[in-house]
Image 1 (cartoon, rainbow, N blue to C red):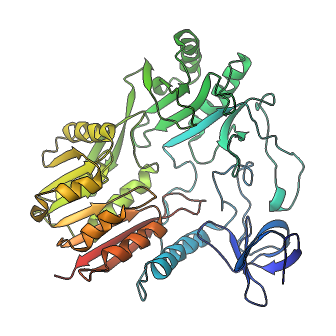
Image 2 (image 1 turned 90 degrees about the vertical axis):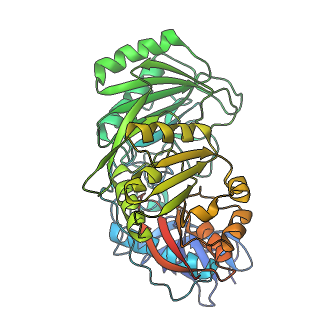
Image 3 (image 1 turned 90 degrees about the horizontal axis):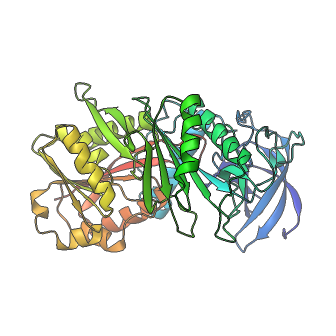
Length: 484
């Protein structure tokens, strides 16, 4: 029997839902190894031993998988942004489809389901319309030694990374404050990468202090860049612990000279100790303080326009969002007589997208600012059959007196899924169809098990869809059909 510290050679069979390689020893004991891919023969070291599984560190690749690819990003393996960039993209989609199948089968108890292949992203690089980068005084220093092993591959170009104690980039997995200084990210556009590199160098040269999670002091906290992929508009948001109009106007002057396409510049101020990019105050230094994005609905190529402010929620892959919303519309089989509830509606993207296909839609969302965005976007597009309500979803369903007026309901909750009470309410409801959109198949399967537990609903269709290439995340649509 293996023990902690043992070094062994294994063959990797598959990936688990977190993107770790799964191996089985001769006795059937399961080992999970980070950075190992299906088809690899690998030398690993046992880091943690439990009664029914072990976790291991990848030491070297004895024989690489045929599906290994060379990651284009030099930060791969250090930055936490992309977990499986070195895995053939078709195989990524296969892995994500299996993740949905396993979740629905093992957690939900739904067997014999027909699950079509995950729909791939139209773009697998430079696809994100929003990125949050953290400033930190705790830089993760890169070892530049060239190695053939993914276990410690660090070919990062440190040009412009600055002195230790200053970084602008993304978190290192497993570390609370460590930030790897990044000058180019393959998830967002080349233009945004220019803004990222310029911003990091600008404030470093001026010796502006960065926020410390240990002392809770320092000025610079986050750089957030948002793009309208279909409009070309760009928002730059510098998040600081206090306002400093003089310093940031100097930054604005140089930003304008170097990047004139930036349409709005914001200084958001947060005094929260936690490293969360949520603002207490906002100061608009250029433009209107928001940008616009456009999505085509497929309804005679009708184009919807969305106003996106600094704090707005919007799907981060614009092109794939069109695909997602169209697939939701298709699987929901909407008719002009349908009255639809859209729960966890956020900024109203799905509500407005489907508004042309139904009689009316009512969106409910707990966040006031998101509901405000939804109302503005409805007015912006001249949509009169969509209304939005600010409410906790559990309270909304518990107190809602007019549920019988609606025949279909859409659910699009956060990764944590639905409150058990919501599942219980839905399990005894009488909707013609429930459409559950989720970015976490595990919580989705858990919730669906409860919703179907009273025998009033059954799964009709399933469709996985990849919104985040090179990660282990997968979006999934499940439609439930009422049996009554």
